[in-house]
Image 1 (cartoon, one colour):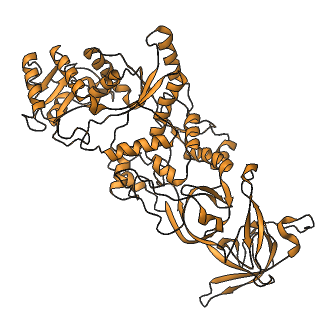
Image 2 (cartoon, rainbow, N blue to C red; image 1 turned 90 degrees about the vertical axis):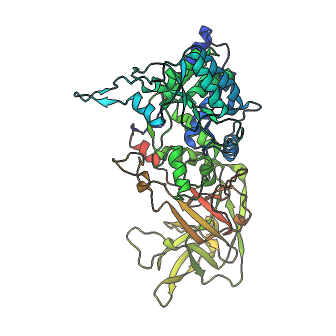
Length: 585
């Protein structure tokens, strides 16, 4: 897969709309009804955003409906807390399924009856082979002497030719709990010589005594995905089953089960899944990161989960815009994460209130400032939005500035504070550095300067030219805050590309989180609402931290007991703009 490098990476022809238009024009369907079918075994990530964006958008575009259906047929890994988390995240993204919430577990009796129907047609049988034996009989793809992949024919199970009557009896006894777990399966009778290994008599039902979060212990047999999914679609009369490209090889099974069960003829259409650099989109890998505590929880701001992005400070609008611009394609590609950040900056720049904060504070003392005097300076809340208005910020003789904004011995082309140099304090005065204080260890503890009272706010009488403007906060009025600086979770673009025997966790970025506990900010930050977003001038976009909690399951994330906690969402530097300037394709 190539990394997409254009203004709309990954964009392809919207072939799904063309298929739907054709189906409507030929009379195959008279309406459009889609569904988003998550499995409740984890929290949703941005790849799922693309999926349900397509599901809901296609339904809306053609005046149809979109269901939310939980494909909950794997009780070992599923939980009601995941259901609640999924619903919360979809709603936060701006979508609603109204009264169309369904569960595959509601269809267990219906699915069982369809399985019986297929057995009666002689198209399914109860097998006594173990899981390993089924795999062995099915066979595997191999390389021939010309290095071409071939699939030698599989072998029929010794129980493949059981009579319809015997299969019906055994299947009923499987349901009744007469047999141990794993001792029998129900398999479709398709073709053990098919080049598509999935068609070599796939398992339809397995025996598994697991408590189901909705049906309890009512069932001890559970339907497999390839059997359940198309028939659940048919049960809801879904016209277009839109799914990611890895299910293309499953489409023949999808059609086979619909045909043999003689149900509503739902149509499966596949699209390329979303892949983004410096992250992983496998729910299995994300679960491992959570369970093995490489991250603080499902809502860790370094994860691509919707909850993690939300806690990081992403907006639904930015995510939807990103997914829309990536487009719907049929070919897999890798999208540069810089483009996602670009879409985010575009929205935050228009909507985020500007404030000043100092992450690594160094005291700045204005020696000629009148003792005890505090002024209020006027500052613009958002230059991109006139309706955002202005605010007053306190200014005094002792300020906090960034430690990196002073150098006793400046390097070349350094225009900030150093002895003898002048800078403008944002919204305030021009000050000239006169020296600094040091402790016994030689560390700089404070910087001294003098201010020019005629230069407030860059008034018309101010003719002095300075080469740098720095931000600050008034020391006495500043609020203490904790800043969490997040970077990419993985240090490489493609953490999933592993050498033989490699482990993706070896690609984790050890510097993906830096916690700064002694930062300072404007007084207004003390009133910041949970999830309120700001631009810390010169530093980046930040959000007031709030762990995302779902009913019945704490995210496992860190709490905000430290006081005011702000997560850095993204820096101000737009790397994607530089990619475009270079003419990337």
